[in-house]
Structures are given as C-alpha cells and as structure tokens.
Length: 143
Image (tube, rainbow, N blue to C red):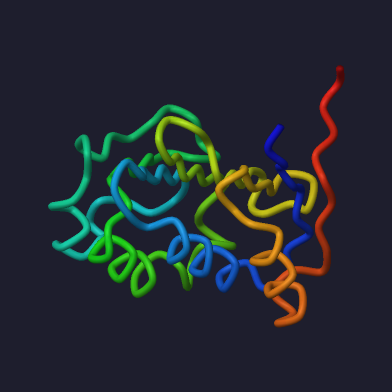
C-alpha cells in the first residue's frame, strides 16, 4: 500500500509552489476554488483553462479554476495566484493520473491538507527542514 500523509503547513504559499513544481507534467490537473475572478487572471492563465471559469453559487468559493498543470501554468499561478492563496483560495486539488496527490481545504487548515503517494516522504522531510511545514503524519485508513 502506498503511503499518504496529513501536513501541518506553516508557509502555505511556499508549500503550494513546491508541490506544484514537484508534480508538474503530463496527466496532471489542478483545480482551485476561491475568490479569484476571471478578470483578475493574466491572459496566459485564461488561455490554459480546461473549461471556462464559471461563477458558482457558493459564497465561500464563487469561482473554480480547472486546468492542466504545465510549466507555463505553474509560472502563471506562481505570479498571480500563489501570493493570494491563503486569503483567496479555499480549496485546491492536484490530480495526477486520476489520483489526488495534493488536497487543501478550508484555507489550508492543518486538518485539511494532505498529499498522495506521488509525494515522497523525503520531499516532506525537506519541507520540514526548510520550515515550510511544521510536521506531517501518515494517514491511517481503517482496515
């Protein structure tokens, strides 16, 4: 069985950027929910959207971005979205080969941040030593 972990984030924007850079590639998709409207996105991001950015009825997350996670996407997100990720992005999912590898909920609440099996524990140790996360623990599943 492949291991998954819960994370206790300290530097949320840095965590987000590091995970994006680790997972970028083919068959990787990113979804963001939050307060970032289409008019606030750079044209380069708007052109990469998998589907049009559509307002939602949920007041806590009125917009959803859904796009492939490519090098240009990571660069555009790093410049425009990452600085606002804690305040304006309520949920994040990065999916690789149809499996969730990074999931954030409730604006990076420490009980709502997890990583999947594509994230090696050595990467988590590096995040810990860099002060980006306070700690991590294995996700226990019921047997």
